[in-house]
Image (cartoon, rainbow, N blue to C red; front, side):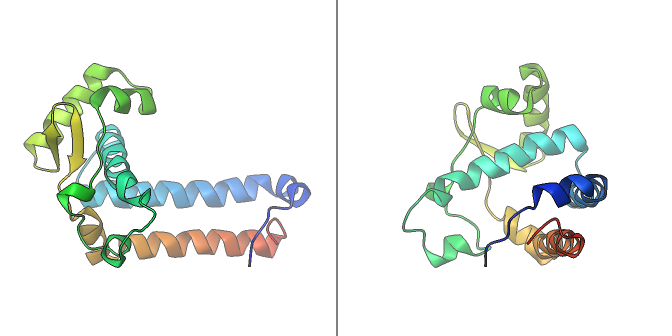
Length: 155
């Protein structure tokens, strides 16, 4: 089954849908921030590093079953990102990124495997899974899609 947005119905219900999406996104971000004990900007820097870490393995055409699950990635499976690229992605000053990265390194949340190559240590998803966070966030998104379907904005 493939869902599609009904543009006219979406426009007629846009405030309702935007509110549902906004609440879901905010709730998801707050749960993630709280889980890692980070404030908003530091969390954004960390989150970009998390996503960069998994991009390498996700682009592998023959990804193994362990990489698809919540098992920690092996060091050779992890990608990385530079401080400069994080600043570009988030649109914040490089010095701000440097400050947050320094703290994340000090707290043992990330590693610098080679000069300018930042990644997580492995086990980030497993930690989230133990707390039930990815499943709960997915349920929240399903609830939003179901609400959109009920309003006729998705079919």
